[in-house]
Structure formats: C-alpha cells, structure tokens
Length: 469
Image (cartoon, rainbow, N blue to C red; front, top):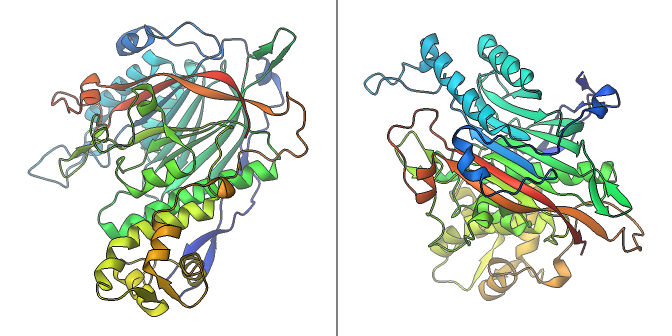
C-alpha cells in the first residue's frame, strides 16, 4: 500500500567543512482512491469509557469534532528497571514490557481518538509491533510506523481511525543529524462532510506532523533542535506549494523535549502556532503560566512540560520562515555576543563568527554551514557597512515585532481567490484538552504512575469557518 516515490527534498545538512549537503527525504504516497473512501462513521466519535470520561463529559456530541492523542510510550530499550544497574532495561524482561504495553493500548483504546501520535515506539520488536497492529487494527485504525535512522530501535507510530479520516498522502522526513530523528507528515481528509451552509458541505482537510525532537543534553544542541523544527516547517510549506493546497489547518504532535521557556517553543509561536493545551486552559506565554502543568519526568529526575499538540489555523498570518529562524538563532547568540563585547558598541564579522564558534553553532559537525552563516550576518548587518551596531541590531533583530509588512500567509497556494467563498477557510478551535494522569495538570508527578515517563495528552478540536488574511 505504501509506494516509495524516491523523491528528494534538499534540506541543509551542516558540517564543519562549511558546506551544506542535502538530506534525502523518503516520500511514501498513499493512494486511497478505492473502496476505503466510502467508510461509514462519524468524523469524531469519542468513547466515554475509562479514564477519558472526565474530559468527554464537557464536550458536546458534535459529529464534526476530531480528537488527537500524543503519547511518548517509553520504549522498553530505554526504560531502566534497576537504579543500581543502569544497564538493565525493561526490554530484557518480556513479561514486564508486554504487560505495560497492553495497559498502554487499553488506555489508548479507551479514548478512541481520531488520530494517535506515538513516540518511542519499539519498532525493533516484531512481537510488540504485531501487538499494536493487531489491537489497533481490530479497532479500525490504519497504522504507519517510521524507525529512526541508524537502527536506533525506536521510532514513531501514527494511527488514523479509518471511519473518521482518510489518508490522502503520507511522507517521511529523515533529518540524518546527530540525533537520528525523523518526522511523519500526513495529509488527511474527513470521511463525513462538514456543512458550510444549507446548500453546501465540504470535507475538512488538514496536515498532521508526528515527531520526537532531540533531547537537549547540553546547550550546544539548541541549534540542532531548532533546525529539526525549521526543516519540518520548510517541508510543510514545500508540500503545500507543490500540491497547490488551499489554506488548511496544520497540527504538529509529539515530544518536543523542551518547555515553554525554550527556543523551539518561541520559534513555533513566531510562526503562528499555538499550544492547544494552553489555549484550552487559557494559559499565556508568561513565566507564571509556564510551569502550571508538566508532562515528563526525565532521566535526571526533573519534571517539565514537553509534550505539545500545536495548531496553526489557515487564517493565521506569520513572519517569513527564514526571518523567524534567524531571530531564533540570534536569541541563542544574544548572551554570548554581549559577554564577548562588553566594551564595544559594534560587532565585526570576525567577532560575530567567534561568538558563533563559542556557542558551538559553527565549527562542529552539526553546526551552521557557510551559507547559513552568511545569511545570518546579512540579516544582522542591516545597513551593509560590515559591522553590527548594537542599538540598530537590537531594534531590527533582537527586539523585532511582527509588523504588517513582514507578515505573510504561506498556509496554502491559491491564486486569484476573489469570491467570498474562496476567501473563507475551515480551521479548528480548541474544544477541550486533558493530560493523563490528571495530577500533571497541576504540575505534579504521581509516584504510582508507571505507564511511561510521559503523560498522555489528548485534545478535541471542532471545525470553524474563518476568513483568510
């Protein structure tokens, strides 16, 4: 059913040599122009049984709703079972990982979300893969798995309810970086139409990404994590242009391995994405709201919120992607530049490069290539005089705001849309969101929780008509 088209997407792979090499992205296309198109069923049907019932009670029975679950299920090859012997893993004990994953499947099926995005799925175990394929397949899901590169053993699994959604296309992104991370892109359409008015109805389309970013073992990996998101958004834009898509919602699911205070969060916000869980709870980007919920206890014992379901609606205007990326890189640089130039009012190209080298943004295998360095310098040297004036730099780059002349809408590629109907699009509003266990919504980690080292996050969206900018 999956056909490898063998297409390439030229992402920038940075090396210490200063040259950028290409990343090959395997493109798998699903051609569902057959009897799968006529599945019966509601667009969203949420099971009231089990742990999920407390959330569903507050959701109207609206057949147009769609629900997402993202869950890092902690691969048995990573789960430590003995604090005194760190090399001993759950994968060594079949009865342990089998029982835990059966309970994970119980919890997922109790929700019956329209879309499930799982991370740290143990693709290296044929028995575990078969168990998920059998139980989720029997429940009406279509499964697509993707292993991390270099035989890491784990990967991603996305499951789509066939009576809710139909897959139009599926593509895989292989970053081929030091973390061997990957991402899945799915273009889906609702099985049941959504009424626009008394005489017209449409099938809702949306783009979905499932990914798991690199863990920030140290600050030097900030640029790698940032680039992973940059490549995802680059490819989403390219996919929309190549397929001449009308504006449609984009939803990014996964374990982002970073909190609301991090560079990745700020980068996605600058691109018009909102955290659906925070929207549902009316939380802001303020420091006070950054620690109200948690979703992960890492191997260091720290608890933080790292699992997100991001939404970007088709009416959301945003900065050009390259501008947002440059500003995110500059935010990483900011402290180092100030520290290295306390007594001067300007920065030369040489000192700029030295600062990049100190924070390991260049001169390392995963650092910026020469062309990216030049792009950053050109954006920083706004008057082109060969030096960066600090006051001008702060105003134009560090403290920049998204003014009207730099806003654009890359969400779709539709020309000559003049009619009122063409100017309208269908987006999503967040109807509800829940973390499980519920204690994590209060910033607490329950000690008796053993399903994973991550919470399960589920969000319910309802379609809404909106005007494009």
